[in-house]
Image 1 (cartoon, rainbow, N blue to C red):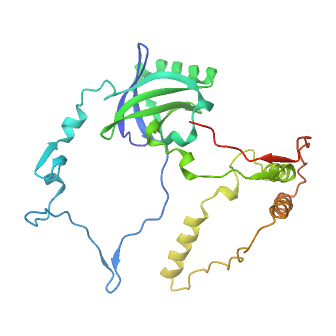
Image 2 (cartoon, rainbow, N blue to C red; image 1 turned 120 degrees about the vertical axis):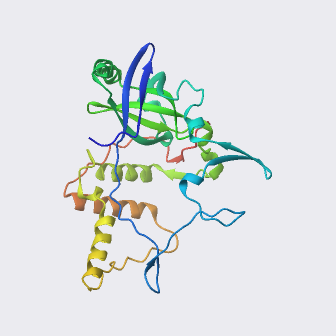
Image 3 (cartoon, rainbow, N blue to C red; image 1 turned 90 degrees about the horizontal axis):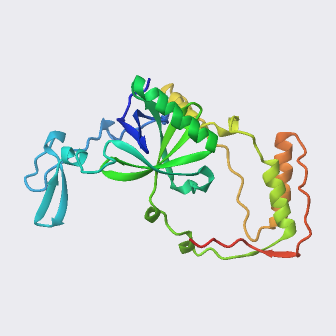
Length: 285
């Protein structure tokens, strides 16, 4: 079983569920170090004191809050761990909401919650089945990595998953982008809907959703190790310049999507609205 990175308890109402937190994802990225190109010696980074120029070890470094240039308040890791918060060692459920009501932009990394000990099995299963039957997500508060966080609990197979969530004030207002409304013809919208339908998938189990970048990078490293020329990127087609015929581009895209899938997606039934329709406006917050 993967290593637990945190332990505590889920609490909802008077029910307490001891759990261990395990990362739900893992990285397969190829990592690089930095080297001096002249002699390929490894580049190292050292932490140096501004006052005496001494190179410091991790044991000699602590956290501090700068009240002013002349006054620093030292705060230890133990003091951060012992903050007087009810969420310091608990994932405190505060509400249950429809899962679809959560804006995905607020959802962060995912962690599996595993029942910790025999006494946790039954209440863990109880919460999991309650979430399954209601199709709801639990909203919780918990303290982690030096701050109080908002979390979302949902079900994946037989496991409860905790997602860190962003607070309201951490989400930028899209109205600041200054996106202007444009007019689209009903024919353009219908052709776009046909393109969406022709590119539809039931799941993400396909070679298109494989990390080809990592495979290509591994091939470059292997070729250089063997003294061969690395494989070259095929020359990309020149991007079109000038004004693009949107309808022609949509029709060509639909044809390509049908050809790649070898099927004939049916055109959605056309409605009879007005000839022109205004573009969708951003909803007010």
